[in-house]
Image 1 (cartoon, rainbow, N blue to C red):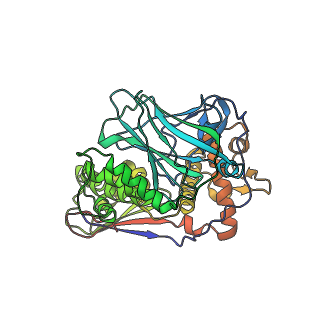
Image 2: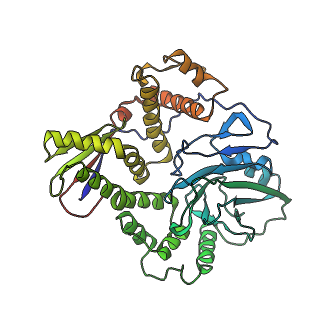
Image 3: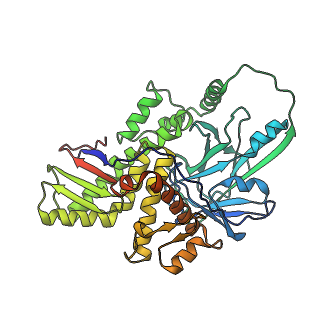
Length: 431
């Protein structure tokens, strides 16, 4: 099957989020924090935002791992749910600029520990530009550690955890991430003549040279060419993957991986499921449409009964996976990505929580950010300071979307639609 990919939506490229906001109740900064990542946290993409609850303080939750810096006993506990699972975490180091103004230097280390027995996980850090600035190395005690480079001026990072080289994961045993800082008095800075680009190049070359011979890529293809191969569905060998892990930008790598996953994993599974259901699609021209509410429609050279049955099979078995892969393969900015996902998550939640009796159009928000228009018990949960991270994130999404709607309207979101079109060959090609 050869699929062509279309997006039908007059989305506006706006960054308006309004001035309303709601923060979790503050906790004592020097107290221990134990953030919990679980299957409800959507964090397969660096562009996704998700709130993590604190096991040590049930009233606190956060999008950001920066809180872990406040106490050396603090950590995040997470699990890889499958061999292909990836966990991405946001880490902001806002105090960095203040320290620099005061002539204080900091050494920030990120530590991956409690790696389940028999597993090998990688931890990689990217800066705000999406460039890789650190790959955790074995520390000799079963953990992996990296130190953030002092030449990188970013104070926002993405921490990415995945299994190494396609190995097995333990879906029951959690890993831990700790982030620690050491302060020191900086000496007068001497200009080394090295700028950001030079330092990135030097770091990546050093990482490449440190690879073992069986991990070191010696081919002639560029990073861009390897990403194109990956996006086309071709399986790269471990040398090529190691090369991309060092040199590829996170945004480009994530898109290529998602496109490849659609072509060599998801689409074949969909075709197999359709054939198992007695629907023959070989050699036929048809299209699969998915709206933002998860509704699947099939059109083309199939009978009406086959279209209905095919839509039911795809919607029941693949709707969520198809949506997530589509979003990760997209070229949206982080703001656009989160706005689209927020609308989908919010409308889906309202459909399930109210059994379809309430929708986005029923929501109102006053000048203080208080949500109304929904059932009383639901409004209480959304407006409460004692809600868990899930409801706090829903509240944040509603406030963001409401302000966006006031400025731009919701037509671009409510009418959002994705289309995959079969073009009559035996290979997958997502455009």
